[in-house]
Amino acid sequence: MKILLTGGAGYIGSHTAVELAEAGYDVIIADNFCNSSPVVPERLEKITGKSFPFYEIDVADKNALRRVFDENEIDAAIHFAGYKAVGESVKVPLSYYRNNIDTTLSLLEVMAEYGCKNLVFSSSATVYGERAKLPYREDMETGPCASPYGWTKLFIEQIITDHTKADLDFSAVILRYFNPVGAYESGLIGEDPKDIPNNLMPYISRVAVGNLPCLNVFGNDYPTPDGTGVRDYIHVCDLAKGHVAALEFAAKNSGTEIFNLGAGKGISVLEMISAYEKACGHEIPYKIAPRREGDIAEFYADAKKAFEILGWKTERDVSEMCRDSWNWQSKNPNGYEE
Ligand code: WQD
Image 1 (cartoon, rainbow, N blue to C red):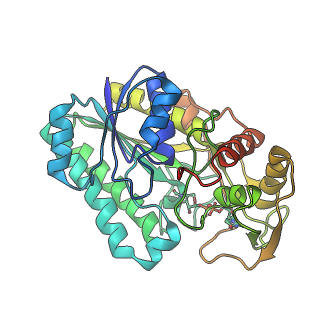
Image 2: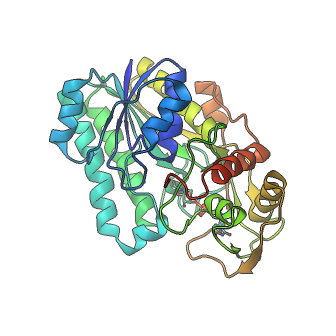
Image 3: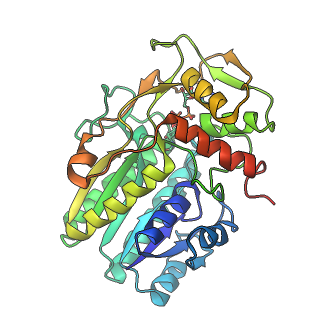
């Protein structure tokens, strides 16, 4: 079976490409490399020994997408392509709405033209909004979202849900990611944000490798065990395996189904720092800084539904997340830039 990964050269997409190839699927990548590297497909070939044909296109461009579908018998699509920086989305909301929604509408419309009826969508725990009670459960109310980025994910979930109500043969699985971290064990692919990372793990990794001087811990006065923010971190390889399970579920069902992909427990910033120090073998310099606007004290998943229905759960712990992040960063101190 041929699976189209939009944004497949990105962090989650590339790790999912490996798991799909290892599960026997053929993978086609469509990516404009705006937040990923053209080096990735050849890294994927090195890891798996398989080829990863890729199309450097804007997924919002329907004619470009049509070319992909003309040249490949696509059985299903996993939609990763989209802007995803929370802070940036507050500064340029229109470009987030335009890009994230246009790419989705173009993909759904071209899939309909070619009779491709299976979709997995990359959503986010951020759709639960700030009022949600812990642990987050799929049947909970969603919103209000803390950023335009979050709203794009929630609007896209609605678009997909409405589409599957209109086309009863269409099958969609929406995956709400918690906090993906880590990298594939070979150290050939990993998280490589452009500019200064917003997220904790890539920031710690760059401090550990000496590219940044010190980590700012955004607040230690939260109502959490050690006062720092608590999140549900999930190893990116566990997350990728969740996509293979979701794809298999979509192929056997119709309608829309939503799953949390998380470990179901929280880890604090200070706990993550100490786990990373064990993994890299040296101290991570940090200082306590003011809280970051928009942050909440803690959130983590109720991960039961994915286990009960998909038979999927996380297998890697925080020490493996840090070990694999460090392995990637120390082998690629400047990310994919040679
Ligand atoms: C984690 C914790 C920070 C950086 C975001 C998006 C979410 C999803 C995952 C896409 C918090 C603290 C962070 C730093 C710090 N992305 N922190 N110093 O904000 O939970 O979630 O990424 O779907 O949508 O919102 O992740 O890694 O930015 O923060 O102290 O330099 O680390 O305060 O407690 P977050 P994060």
